[in-house]
Length: 179
Image 1 (spheres, rainbow, N blue to C red):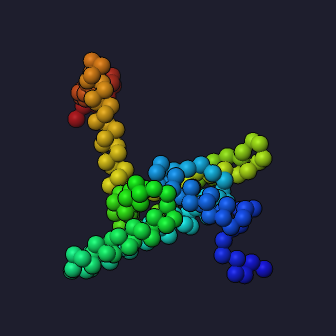
Image 2 (tube, rainbow, N blue to C red):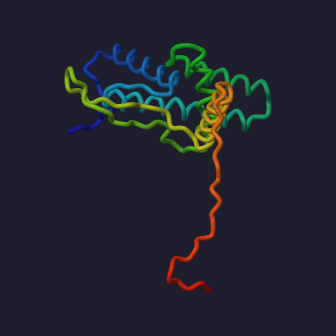
């Protein structure tokens, strides 16, 4: 029976497991995606989603307060709590200022696990763990990519002109009546 088994042990001691998961979640927030085994991805996902939810809740709580001193105290306390787990101030800043605001409309499911391959050396099942992007982020990235491509084309002197073919009226074939 699996009763009261909260998490995977990943064949590691508690301190080694904690260090591994801290590093993976930090890398996920830094790069937006990581490749790892499925078991590690599932554990990392659990912690990453918990941190994103915490950052969102702290932001909502700050919005309900009226006193600036209280707002600052809540912000600092929330960031310090996240910093206990994450490596580096820049990652904590990115979590609270970039990642959490983009996930405000989501009620969970901030990450996705995509199974990719079987590792050749030990037949471990590999997966990609990545942050899910909002529709606004996807549209902004597409627009930026398109603008960059157009700028590169103009810089290189290559202009693609699309000629619109005018639809000529089709002539009736021999033997067909025209109306």
